[in-house]
Image 1 (cartoon, rainbow, N blue to C red):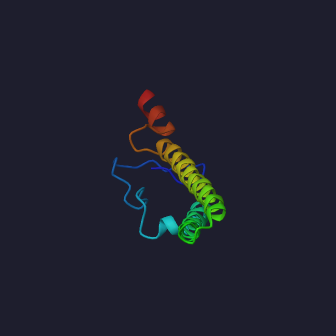
Image 2: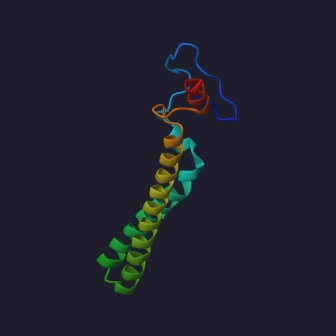
Image 3: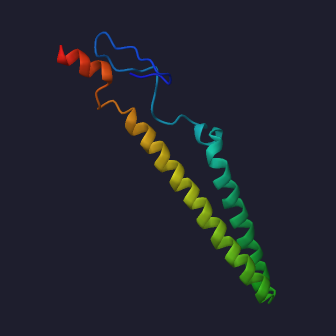
Length: 111
């Protein structure tokens, strides 16, 4: 049972902390601004794919190749940003996982 601050309140009866849920609540993904850059890159990739399809259909091969490359690069960039963000958030949740002992629990067991 940890807080976002540097201090911690030990539970009195080893009860589960139900006030702070670790699972994402509805709308939290969109409210987290760290993912917005990836969403913008996904939007650019989608538009680039549409332009590539239209340019290919109208026989503008040069434009289709340029926008095809842009689509691949922006899609890879968006996926990379999402992967980095998930890795960062996973590292944060591993530090706060309930299976690990907190500092005060280790001290209390040693006495």
